[in-house]
Structure formats: C-alpha cells, structure tokens
Image 1 (cartoon, rainbow, N blue to C red):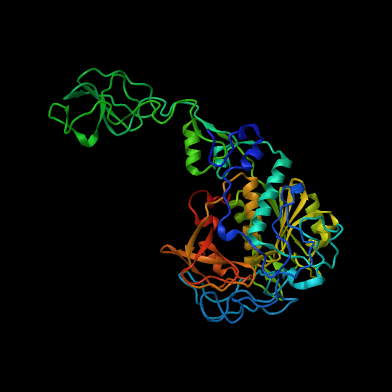
Image 2 (cartoon, rainbow, N blue to C red):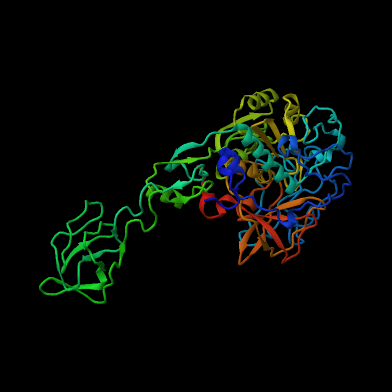
Length: 563
C-alpha cells in the first residue's frame, strides 16, 4: 500500500529519500513569485542542480529589493486602520536609534494586546538594530551571493545582493533538506512508544495479532445462550481473566465490557435490556439478536494486515493503535538535531532590563518552537558577540541544523557572514523579501549540515523560523506538509511595496482578524495569535482572502508536541 503522494517504487529507495518525497503539495497560485518587484534581473528562485536545488544566483547588478522607502504599513498607519503604528519601522535603520513602533492605543481585534513592547528585541528595529536589513546597506554589505560559496569569484565584498522572494526561500529550504537527507543517509531508529510522538514511521505498521485477539463483550450485561429466560450463574466473567467455561442453552453469566466471551454464547444482553424475576431468572425486555454486542476476533484487523503506511506521522491515536497491535517500539525517521546559538552581549537571562541591557526573548522561545517542528534541540548556548566563540561553536557542531540569533547584518559585531565566508560555507539564501525578518539567511555548512541565521528581533526571528527552519526541519523529519488554506481578512492590511508580510491574526467566525503590535521587535501580537497571514506586496483589502500559516500550538494533534 502506497501512501498519498509517494511513488510506487519508493520501497526501493533509502528511507530518507523515500520519505522526503512524501505528500508534496503543489504551489498555491499566490505563492508563484512571478516577475520580481522593482528588479529587472533574473528569477530569484532558480535551483542550482549541482546542489540539490540550492539558492538563487545573485550575479546581476540590479537594485536591492530592500527599498528604503517606508512600507504602506509603516509610521503613521497601523494594519487595518489609520491609527498610530505599532508595527514595522518602515525604512531600514543604519545604526542604533529609538524604535519607531512606540506605545499607543490598542486597535487590535479580539485578543488584541495592551500597550508596550517586548524586551529582548534585536534586529530590524528596536533597541539594538543589530539585525537590520543588509539589503538596505547597499555596497556596505560584504555578503557573498546566495547559491555560491562566500569569497568565491564573483562575490566580492562590495557586491550588492538581492533578497530571495519569500515563496522561493521556503522552496530552497525544502530542496536543501532533501539534499542533506540524501547525503546523511541516516538510519531509521527504534523508538519506545512513549518517545515516538511526532516522528514519522520509517516502516509500515503491520498488525502483530488479530484485533481483538479473542471474542470480547462490547457492553456490560449478561452473556446468554439460547432463548430466554435464563438461569444466571453465580460466577461472573471479568476482563483480563482466562477463558470462562462454556454456557449451555438457557444459561447466562454476568459479563463486563472487554471480557472474553464464554464458548457457545448466543449474544450479550445489555444491563439496561434485562430484568430478573423473584426466582433470579433473567428476562429480556427487548428482542435478542444473535451476536449482538459481541466484538468478534479479528473484527478490526487480522495479524499481518497493514494498518498504516510508511510515512505516517505518529500522532496520539497512532501510538494507541500501535500499542493495541502489540508494538513496544516504532521504527521511525530520527528527529533532526538542532543546536541553538544565542548571540549578543546585551542580553540578560533574568531580571529587569537595565543599563542598556535587555532580556533574551529568543532563548526561551526557540527551543520549544523547534521541538514543535519535530526537532531534537540538543543545546542552547549563549555566546554573546565573540566571533571566535561563534566560529568554534559552528565548526564543532555535528547537528543537522545550527540556528543563530542576530548578527546577520553587516554591523561591527555582526559576525555571522564573516564566519561563514571564513569556513567556506555556501549561502543558499541571503535575505528574504519578507517583513519582518528580511535579513535572515540559510547556509550549507556541509553536504548534510545547514545553518539558519535568524534576525535578532523576536518577531523577525519567528518569521525566519517559519520561512527557513520549518520547511527544512519538516523535510528532514519526513513530515507531511501542512494543508494550505486561506480565509478572508476582516480588516485591510497595508503591505510592503515589494515584500511579503507575515501578520499575526486570530481566527473568528470563518475569518481572520489582524492583530496589532506586529513590528519586528514585538511579541505581543504573536503571543495572542492563532496563525500568521501571508500578505502579498501591496497589501490586502478588507474581506480579501489571504493564505494562513497555523502556529504549532494552535492546531489540533501533533502540533502541541513540545518535548
């Protein structure tokens, strides 16, 4: 039996190759990048066949897509209404300065948060500006071109680079994961049932026994033989006991749900369908049908039946079915291993912000989110702004994915790009046309190892998780892609002229309500959100449908797995 989306000959492939091909979803029409905005250059999503479809070429000389003009949702307007902005800061910030998303009256829909900002912001705006958009810095950037090794010919330090369209960046991450899965050739693992939640089956689940394995009672009542009335035995039949003695015609025995049916039983009479007379004889109060309320052996399956195919996600019901079928362990695709490196000397791990220091919001946020995406988070290290320590941490990691926070721009202590150049990493994505989160990156460290560089601002980092880490980890874990869907937005949302926007929303009555406090440094909107709306360049009208990306904990089933 072949699961949906697999090829009939997948059984002949290695498990990672087979499972990486499971349930591929076609691109939605609104995800087609089409012509690039404001750039006459070539398409930014062209795969590099030599690297399994790695990132786009940046060899052209077209203008940067990080247009310094303010977005339509920038200062002076909030998403969906003309009040004070609580969102993006609009133009890029070249250096430290006050956040433009200052406090103001809340205009959010249901669940709209109250005033204020979130400490721990690093990146596009807010106190540190350390993740500010490299595309806005023109020739001051020193990044190599995505799709080519930093420092290679054609990637001079002064070269402009062009950000990758948001849908293309997600596709690049999926292709990179496929390439890594083929290179790693990781073996399936045998995992105890209580540790298998969220894993993908690397072998079909085949019944080890009949289910049920013997005839059982479906109800509490009496096992009866022949027509009534019946004489009731003194000894009843309970679940978990050996096979009881046979019944004779005209005889009944008390029986519990799940107990073995005595041989020669005609039917089970439910407790509410029988009465006893003064002499203790049992009478039916309605007709008795042969075999009623008996679950016959093998009713659900016979030993050897395939219960679930290769590639099935181990949800709680799957674990229950496996246990019922006699399994103690499952053969599964191993979780992708992730090391998290939190950068920045200004970050505190406790207490109130003070003296220019701010609380680290990403250290607590990232590990559970990554686990919800199916990863095994092995370590969370706080490195500060130490280039040597960062390089050692990156080069000594044997994780499938290294995630860094902040330091992805071109400031004096933004060390990610220089380190990637020094170690010969290959930039697959260097900036994405999405707000917040523009200065994210994806690099190939080895054939089977990648690095996702997240901006330092909290919501910008969430955008990077969803854009690059989620498709990469999902593909490595051989999880099925989530079903894509769209709902109408209850309010208009102003968009960036060229970039996709990811806007927190709550779901209400078959629609989505955009939330405020959605600037790069803010977590108040996403903390109240059910999903993120994908807002195309130019924005959306009130009532217009937008694609929604569910947040892991807002969906039923496996999404709530954080351990």
